[in-house]
Length: 94
Image (cartoon, rainbow, N blue to C red; front, side, top):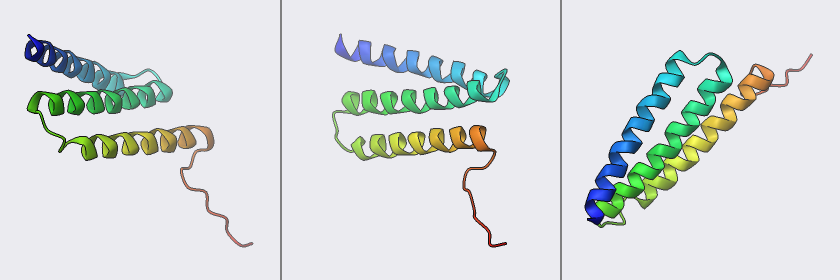
């Protein structure tokens, strides 16, 4: 019974990732696309965690941390790009 619930949740997470991917491609505005990318990152973390439980291994915990960190950095970079137009500011001597 527990495995059926885990497989069903993986299927629903996959559907959610595809819905967010559609929003990334067809999003009406750039902030909607950023939110969809953040949603994809969160769903990937949840999917890998469920897969780790299903396979009964701790090997994927580092992958979960890596996806979480990359998703956070990507969200911050997109937010800075939307706010200022550049991700990294460079001060030039004049």
